[in-house]
Length: 114
Length: 117
Image (spheres, rainbow over the protein chains, first blue to last red):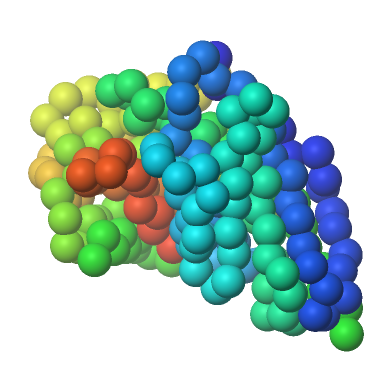
């Protein structure tokens, strides 16, 4: 069964500092990987996705993520965090077969301090 | 493109009543739609997968008689919470799946906040 682990429940960074959110997945084949952001009381917004090809993917809002097969990781990064980035971030894995089942990590809450 | 809407965005109901939540793919056809439930400060848990014109597939532990799912068309799926109780209060999110040249992707609705009094 596929699974996703986000080891950091809560992260606090200063505005302007760099950010890395960790994500590890478990899946038998090459998965489809996603990062979503959720503001309080809101739905999910897709930041970026990896299906195949270049392992470094660029997303919206200046985010990027790198797929590392050897480490089963898909960490999210941003070089300079803005106060508006404060939100909950979810890593997700979808099976690359026909069922399209998406499994979410438990989320990392990002707090940005001035 | 690939917008999914949900209606209502927020609903409050009395215990014992039924509530219907609609999920629409506005600019694409979603052969498959998914329903998720999110508890406060928790992740999203897949409840069921619905395919247009067929019965929904429920995840283990989800009561199919309590959470009725209908996927009558390629752009509409509904979730009906029957005989709702306070423990059903939650944030319900749907998604529609679309296959693109680069693979499959789900597009999420904005969610529906259900409060059962």
